[in-house]
Structure formats: C-alpha cells, structure tokens
Image (cartoon, rainbow, N blue to C red; front, side, top):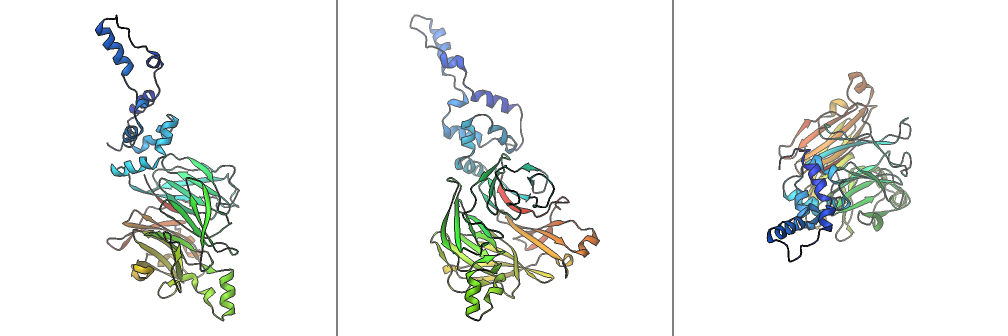
Length: 410
C-alpha cells in the first residue's frame, strides 16, 4: 500500500466498526415465506461488519493502513486502540516493510525557562513537528531537565530525576510513568529485550534498575562495580554498557585508601553488564585508548560507538565485542568538530543510532568564538557506517537547546 493517506477510507472504516442495530435485531425468516425473500433476509443478517472480524484478520487489515492514518484509527473504538498497542501490530508492519527508522529530537525547558512545561519534538529531517506538547501536571517542574531518552518499540521514554514520561511516536500521546526507585541525574540508560536499564547518577546507591513497561514498574536487578556520575549508556547484543563519568561514593573512598587516583580517570572507561546472566565484566573497566573523556555513546548492531573528548579535539571509536566479554577498540574517522571547539568553551554531545547503518551526533557548542561566527546553537552530524564518512545533517531550529535523540521505527 502506498504510504499516503486517503481520507475517504477512514469514515468507511469507522462506520463499519460500529454494529448496525437493524442487523443486530433482525429475525430469521419463518418457513412459510417465499425462498427469494428468505435468501435476501439471511444475506442481510449475515452481512458482516469489520467489527465481526477476528483479531488476527483485523490486525492484518489495520497493519496495512498508512502511517498518517494511525492516530485517527486509535480514536475509532477501544478494540482498535488495544490492537494498535499490541506487539503483533508492530511486528506485522515490520513484516510488510512499512517501518523505517525515524530520528526524533526532544527538547525540554530548564527550571529557569519562563515558559509552560512542554515537550518540543521534531522528527528527522525536522519536517514533522509534534511540539510543543504539554507535559502532564503530575510531572514535577524541572525533573526532566536532564532526562535520558530511551526507545522501546514505538515509544520514547524520558527518564529524569524522580519522573518518567512516555511519548507515543505514532499517535503523539504523552503520559506519566513510574519514576526510578532511586533519584538519579546524569546516569546511564539503555533498552534491551523490551526492558529499560539504568545505572549510575547516584552517590548513595550502586543499584541497577530494570523497568517493565507492561507492569509500569522498576526493580533492582544488580549492583554496578563502580558508582559513576555523568555517565552515558548504550546497548548492543544483549549487553548494557555504562560508560564514562566520574567515580563517586564508595569507589572514591576505596581508591583513596589504596593510594590510587582511579576515581579521577574513569571518564574514559566502561563497565559491561550481560542482561541474560546478570553478570558484570570481570576486572578493570575497558578504557578508550589514549585517554580522553567519553562524551557520547550509542549501540548499533553488535557494536558500541563512542565519542571521546581530548581538550579541543574529539576522537571516535568502535568497541569490537568478542567472546567472554572481551573485545578491542577500533579507531574511526573523527567527527568534523575541531573548528567549532576552543579553549574556554563547552560542547555537549548526544548520540543515537539511526537503524544499523548510521550514527547521528547532535553537537551543541557554547563559546565566544561560536557566537561571533553566528553558528547555530546545535548542529547535526551523520556517520555512515559502511563508508566510514561523516556528513552534515539538517540543522536544528534556533533555540532547540538540551535536546536528546531517540530513534523510533515508524
């Protein structure tokens, strides 16, 4: 089916979903009526509406509806809403080749912004604006200012300090979800096998939490070997990577007693958590060659891609995972950002995989030199994994600050 919306089809679909009361109350004919009249009456009674179809057949029909019509379908009836939210609907659209990776940039106001709490969202290449979207009243002000964005199926979860927000990328619906058990800020988060995992960002706990979207509940599944603050998360091949940041809490105390400076050099390292076995990689955390501070990371396929900052330069690495949690680093072409960085300035990076063949990096530079050049607040770089080359992507609109990236199949 062509990916276009035919408005004439929706009214018919909505009308056919509502049972006809005349058919529901029609009586079967008595035996003394003319055969032709009997046939006509039986045909009228037996004529099915779409509501009489079994779920599997109705799902097959709905799965072929063009994407722009999906929000309208969810308003037809509760049965439609239930089927559209089912994993089977998502799987059928994928099997029909109707899903494609779509990158979303999400921006949230800071507590100092004098504007109503809202979610500003744009889809790659920023041509399908959804925002601003009002944030539910139960979400505390400022709790999502530094939220991590994680994708589960068709939904983007924004996980902040004491609050979680779910955004349905297909319908535009926004709803509040359960917050993490422990307050966290600048932590690692990633999705694996239909669950969300978070770690770090808290000095008083080393707990790793797992989120079940069906139950809307968090639970503790383990403890990190090093408590990190300012870390980032990534997922690949069933492994949760907790990368970068500074060691806080117990790790600092242990290092001080041992006379080491480990607490200050973990910014270029990562810990690996195998979800299936619930075990961490043994020994010292894997470190990015040449030092540097990890400023962005994401998983694509079976690999993890990492951006590391070295003063006014940025390097780009791929972690080649091997058996037994062993692996090695491969140096890749660095992103073309050296001309935008300088001493005395600051740069913020956010990474996301766009399918399994591209890496997208959002770069936000704040420096006197950038302001003199009239550069945009944020610019987008796209890395093609096959060719190993970076290209400039479409610029974000002015004022789109503190954006997070998330890829959803739409």
